[in-house]
Image (cartoon, rainbow, N blue to C red; front, side, top):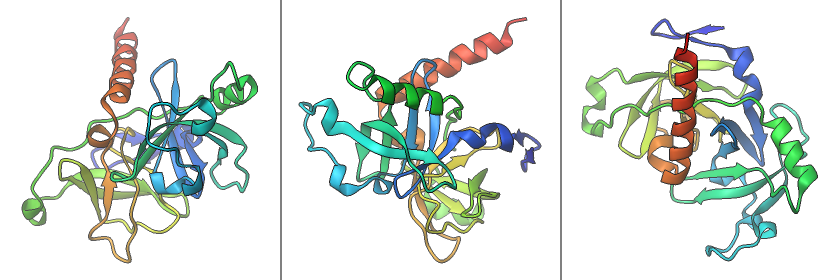
Length: 228
């Protein structure tokens, strides 16, 4: 259990299976209740597999074989089907393969993605000119050594900037967590210092159709938890 700056707690052991290896980096699992998705940085996926930008892609065009695996392992034996790709925001999302054409791969994906993170709301956007006088919103990032490191984040209305934690090569695709342990962003860029890094904010960069599904699932969870 990791205590956060505001006294909340992140159950490190409970969420560990939701952080995974994706392509050349990392990713993390979120759930709409019935469907599970793996969010990562777009640059973690092999560029040779990027589909052509049209809606006539077949399932085979969108399948990434052996793209997901356990973090810390060299093996990636889980297949995923691409459902979101934004090169300008550096964010991608994988879903389960079609259970009609690839039933075994779909079953493997569902078993592997059973543990999921919730998606939180990004901090209120603040003009960059005001960041120097503000503490930022408390958050956590997963280091290369797989240790949760506290930091502060600022939102410019599209991207999150991390202060107080070094963002290194190998962290791409990792989640940025708020103090409740909910994912609010995905690590994208790295630099030699901890002053300026740019990362997609989930509530600003994920497509509306996916955010609706994730928000609906969280509302249902809150209702069930509030019942006596």
